Length: 593
Image (tube, rainbow, N blue to C red):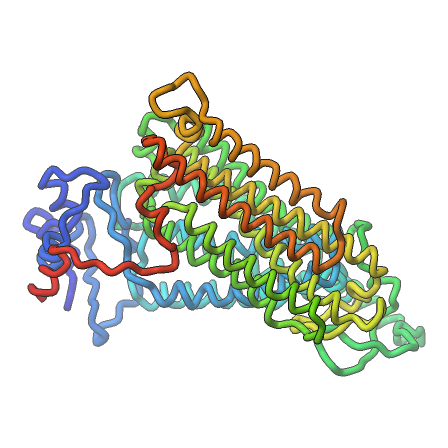
């Protein structure tokens, strides 16, 4: 089957499904019936897009070298969720390893410096995923040789960056290890490949003129911060190769540059010589060697800071921003964000399952408390997030959309830290003594690891990470709910039905209790450091959150408020069930097939 794109055919082309809906007078968010959509899709198999001279063949016998990317939809088009893309799922697999390697940073160094390296690796890695998400939600590259090579190159750059996510003692020592050099270089290459996508949009694209405006903006907002990656790579390279050169000359001079004691090299079971121990200390102190991670961390901060300024203050309101922007496929973004959240929750599952065993009741009690907590966190997340574009923050307002996107990133980082904390709680039962750092799948960092701390100090640090991350998860989850419906509509839920001047005491109490739970989680480490008690209290807090949210939905349905936080019909459904559809229109499609 061949789809022709030609100027000559522009006047006689068969309209696309979205165009057919506009001819019917159907507005955004009012879709065609399934039978009408099927007929429209059948008619649109020979859809001709104007202003293009390319012929794109969908058959395997004719493979194009390169073809124009296409704009997915225009403002006002009825958006249709694309089919599952196996390439996206394959791309996500690399983030399973990324999340696990990121957790090893905190497990090895539960310190302030460890958090710095965690954030400095997490947000740039997530930025690669977001780059792909926001591009794919607005544009579609055809299946040609050049775009295939580009996708493979991005995956290779991502894989290289993930491979070199190492503990602080390695990333923070660019003089001896090349991991920071490789990590920052891979990030820079991935960023340049992303910029190249928009260079292509700027040169040629099947779409509206606003598409090229979006490309110019993206080049400016992303191209400049990407130079920070290059700066991190240059600094790390100078540190590494200068030190190697100096050591070589010292070796020729007969100086012993190695320790006399043999130690185990990180991530291996072999024994080899390492550099002097004082150059490998990883603690809360900072040094010039930490400059590369600061530069990597600065890229997402600068980029999203510029994005916030552009969307909040530079774009006109009242819908006029549509003249300068390209719409995203919101349903596609919701779907991908759901898959991303599953990846972050999956890291918590891996942390609980891939760990040394300790045959004690306390160990298994902590384990099952962790498993129950992750199950309820998954339920709580998908129950509170809208499943359709019309209820999402990105459809409600441009400011709400960028606010939600920022919250999602903080929420994701907190989930990974929480999952790491569960593993650290279980590891407490596997240490034979304070100096016995047991095996972990991702290995240690060559700096003593968590066993370098006293038991009391180590447990205090783990409790700080657990309580803080749990509080951030709850807080960002509530803030995302506010972003979806807006502050005004959520405040209106606090009023009694038919009595605008009187607050509902039930709602006020529920809000106060949810706020109190967040405060309790944030201060949990002040009172409790025992692993078993922390896990059980965390589970109790999550159960309380689920109950309070269910009570809020019940009060909304009983009050008859039209300002419900979520769709009350969807609230009553368990979010893990795919409910069957037996509507007449669906049956009609099967009958016509």
